[in-house]
Length: 88
Image (cartoon, rainbow, N blue to C red; front, top):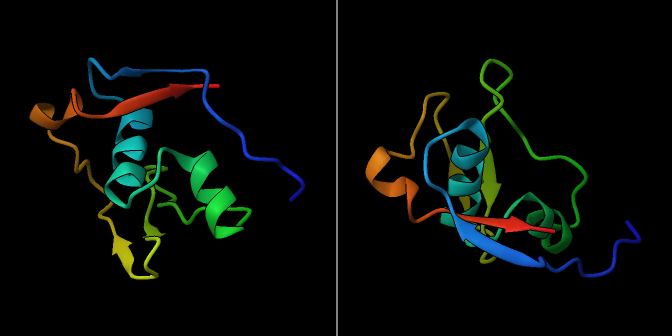
C-alpha cells in the first residue's frame, strides 16, 4: 500500500442516519476518523463487514483490542449529530 498519509480537506457533522453514517460511527467509536485512516494505521486492505447489511463487523483499536458490532443499526438518532463526516 503506497498510499501516503491522506488527510481530509474538510469535515462536517452528520444530520441524519444512513448506512455510511453508521459505518463512520463504528470507526469513530474505535478511535479512527473513517475507513481510510483505519486502513492506513492498521495496514489492511479490507475491513470485515456483515454481508447482509454491509455494516462494519469488527475493528481493531489502536491498543490492539477488538470492537465487535451487530448486524443491526447501533448509531441511535441521538448520536447521529456526533458523527463526523470527512471530505477528501
